[in-house]
Length: 385
Ligand SMILES: Cc1cc2nc3c(=O)[nH]c(=O)nc-3n(C[C@H](O)[C@H](O)[C@H](O)COP(=O)(O)OP(=O)(O)OC[C@H]3O[C@@H](n4cnc5c(N)ncnc54)[C@H](O)[C@@H]3O)c2cc1C
Image 1 (cartoon, protein in one colour):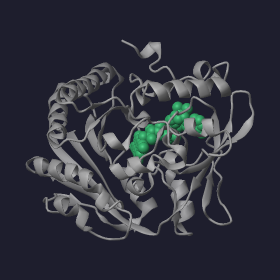
Image 2 (image 1 turned 30 degrees about the vertical axis):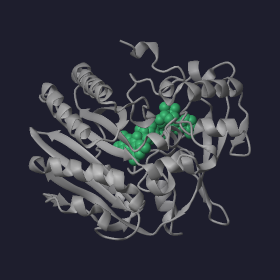
Image 3 (image 1 turned 90 degrees about the vertical axis):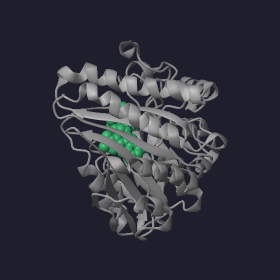
C-alpha cells in the first residue's frame, strides 16, 4: 500500500478520500490548510488502514466516536478481485463489518472519511512521580466519569518503569485552543516534573507523541477491558509494577501500562451509521481500556517478556471477575497475537461477521492466504500455548 498516497477533499469539503499508504500525519497535514481534520490516530507514523479497520481512538473520540464511526464509505477489493463501495446504502453488511472487523473482508483501497472543522488544539504530557500516583488515578477516573461535561477533552494515563524509576505520564488534550480547560482542574492541581502542554496543531501534537514511541526496538501490546473503577485502576497499576520487576534486567527495556476510558459520549457515537461491529454498549460503560506495552532490544528476552504481559492481563482479568468488573471486549488495535479479538465482540456479532465474510469471501482467501492479524475464529493455532 506504500505507494497509494493520494489524499483528496470533496468539492463541498465534507469528505476526505484517503488512500491506505498514508500515515495520520500525512492526512492531518494535508487537511490543515483548509482548517479541517479527520478522526484518526494520535501518533504521526501510524497508518490509516489498520487503525481505522480495528476501531481507532482519536483525540476527538468523545465528540465524534472512533475512527471507524466516521467513515462515510470504503472502496474495497474483495477476494474475487471486484472493486466495490461499502457504505450505509451500498453493501451495508460489508460496511458494518469493516468498522471493527479488521483485514478479514477485503483490501481497502480508499477510506472516504467525514471531515471535522479543526484549527488549533491544546495538548501535551505532564510527567508525575510516585507520590502523585494516587491523585493521578483519582483525576483519571473522575475525568472518565465526567467526560459528558466536556466532550472536547481527552486523556491517556500511562505508568512507566524506566531505568529503575517509576513515573506516570498524564497526556491531556482539548480539541479547542483553550489552555487548562476547567475539566482538567484535578489533573492540573497535581505537581508535574515536566509539562509539554501548549496550543498547537493536531499534526504537531502527533509528532510530539511520535517522539515518545521510538522505532527500532522489539515491541508487544496486550489489552483488556473492564468497567471503570477507581480502586481497580490502582490495582492494575500495582500489578504492572510488581510484574515488570522480573524483566527489569532486559536490555533497553521500556515497559508501560497505558490507561484510557471508553467514555459514555464515545459509546453514544458508536451508534452512528447503523452501529459498528465492536459489541460494546453504552448502558454498560464507561469502560477502562488497558494497553500493556513493552519495548526491548534482544530477541532472547522475547519469551519471558511475553509471559510477563500474559501474567499482567491474567491477574487483572481474574481480579476483575471477582469484583464484577470484567468485560469480554478485546480491542484489536492493542491486542497481542495471543488474544482472541473477534470472538470477544459477542456471539451475535461474531456470527454476523462470519456470515458477511462467507458472502464476500466464500473460499476464505483472507483467512487462509493472508498471513497474520486477527482472524475470524480468533488466535491462530501457532500462537496457542
Ligand atoms: C506508536 C503507536 C501509537 C498508536 N496510537 C494509536 C491511537 O492513537 N489510537 C488507536 O486506536 N490505536 C493506536 N495504535 C494502535 C494501532 O491502531 C494499530 O497498531 C494498527 O494496527 C495500526 O495500523 P497500521 O495501518 O499502521 O498498521 P499495519 O500493521 O499496516 O496494519 C495492521 C493490519 O491491518 C490490516 N490493514 C492495514 N491496512 C489495510 C487495508 N487498507 N485494507 C485491509 N487491511 C488492512 C493489515 O492486514 C495489517 O495486518 C498505536 C500503535 C502504535 C505502535
